[in-house]
Image (cartoon, rainbow, N blue to C red; front, side, top):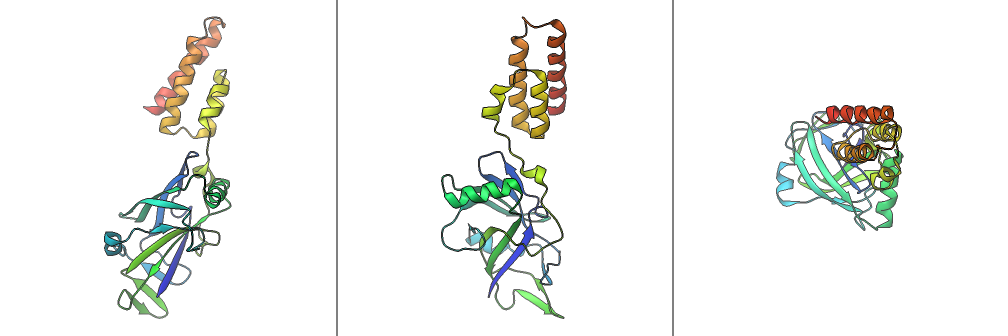
Length: 223
């Protein structure tokens, strides 16, 4: 029996990493009750992950994969996956744009259940095992309406093009706020601030002091 289970991206804690097309999050969480009345128990994917590697499609269209899942691991909360969209593939580019804009906000697992994989009672199922996890798809219409995507979590900044445009501490601060201060972003910003400080000999001392204060604040945030 082919089964598809869907979660909102906010519910699966999606994280998109810059403009590389990489993202990660929970494809399934343990113990919840979905709109079909089904509950997936911890360890349901243990056996299938030993022999199967799920594909990545869009909206369960089993034709051309739009990327690949580089990792699929069970933890205490659910099935945590990491994936990459295929560079240069038109559908992957469209999906990436929709993810960043927040208009595509669902994740869905697809695979096969066999008799004995679940217990049925009063029209609901407790799924103890997925015999085959075939694929995990970004989808347009998720079944779980309990949560919405956190748009801040998919915000993307092109630092390679924006950093050279920063000519003052004010612009550095603005970029810092927009970025949400990730680890590598902070390192890149610090590097740019240091370049400003070194080139501040011709500026007024007050401006140089302000720049040094900004650098100190960033270093404390990264500590």
